[in-house]
Figure 1 (cartoon, helix red, strand yellow):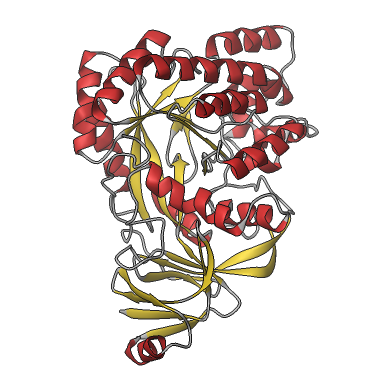
Figure 2 (spheres, one colour):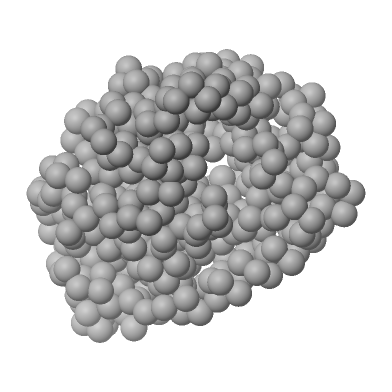
Length: 467
């Protein structure tokens, strides 16, 4: 099927340009300035013409940090690969990279097989995997090479959650040494979990059990300390490092200092850290449980630092860390003990919209919007130029975006499989109108036209930013 997207403004990292886009099957076939003879000839060839006048035409969003069906605290995140990728499509995200979670004693390859079994035939958009490495041993280190051969070349480790995911500095060092030899990318959840567990235990023993304690027992200094330690280990080993879900100004300072020396250190932040704050954790009653995630929401003054980090490229990517748990029955597991509240905030559907709100507020440019939401994650995780750009030969993952539309975010209208919205009642400007995934229209004029099984697993190349 050939589709002509006519009269729109194509947005990319280099800026904006009036351009018609022709797709042919699953790929972008050609671009031309509107009004030219070649553009006029395409209309006769196209099976469908989409009038994009007054609209932005963007490469499909890439959310490099999601957790569908993730086990945590005796339950599972509420979105399946089917419901989660459908919600992603509604929000203009046409690729997710999810995390396969290695349990203690399990092999990486058996874990990868298990996550393939969950996702195969279920996804509405394309998907890839990172590996969570929670059991570092000789066999695991060897299996990292096999994972790379299977198209999974990024490995997440945790300095938090002792007894579950936590890795010692020595284990992190060994994994980084292995990554340095192979060109793989180590991703790090950087919080000092040993110290945090002491603060949590002290709070519970003293009867301080409300959700706000989740934020108070995970202070920004312990995120900054772990970030600095991870950067030091990466420098010793020569390994690249990607800090996930950075939330605190102090942690960003550590990343900025490392990048200023030329070290291959990268970081992402998430919309919740740009818009929500520790005040949400302090909402009356048990409402704050809806906002429990790790790292926790910070005081509002951190938000300005994060926006500056995005503008200056010390924060390279915005992902969601989408890990939804319903308030009823799941978040409520922590009534009377905040440490038992499942950690996670839903957001895969709203990332492009919330970032566009940053454009309208003057925090980032249109070009930077597309860069942090699509192009840079494509480069970072070995998908470019197949994904993350509108150019001939690339996958026809395209979003037609109305920058003037108004909408109110709400549980009543979102498509995520969760019973609340972290952004309930927030009024924003801009809305996705049409979404193509590999040339197939999956969202159009407020209707879903996708299907489970359309999404394909993506075997990824090594990171293009690294040697």
